Amino acid sequence: MPGLGRRIVALLIDWLACLLVVALFTGHRLLAPGDRPILTLAVFALEYVLLLTALGTTFGMRLMGIGVRRLDGSRLPFRWVLVRTVLLLCVVPAAIYDTDYRGLHDRAAGCVVVRL
Image (cartoon, rainbow, N blue to C red; front, side):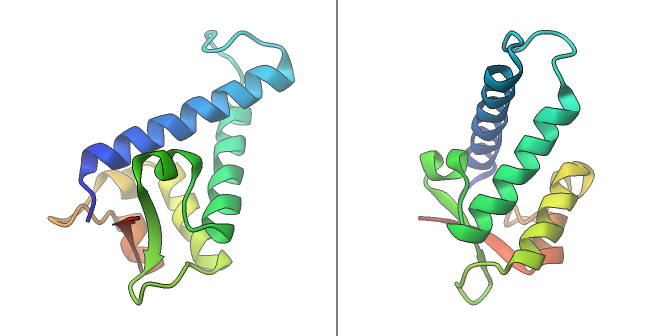
C-alpha cells in the first residue's frame, strides 16, 4: 500500500491541475485570493468522478504511481466512486485513517489505494 505522502502529493497535484483549469477558463490569475473556490471544487470533483470511474486513477495519482481499486482488485463502479468523492470533499472522512492509511472514505466505498 502506498504511504500517506504519495496520497497527499497526488491530491495536491490534482488540486493544482484543477486550479489551472479554472484559471484558464475564467481568465483569473492562478492562485489569486478568492479565485473561484466553489468552481475549483466542482472541477476537482468532476475530475475524480470521471477519471476514477474510467481509469481507476486521477492525474495526480497516476503521476505518483497509485490508483484506487475495490478490495477484489477490480475498478470501482460509478456509484462507489461518487460516494468516495463526496466523502473526500467533506475532508474529515479522508483525514481519519487506519494503520494501512485507509481513510473512512475508502472504507465506506469498499476500496483501497494501491501502487500501480
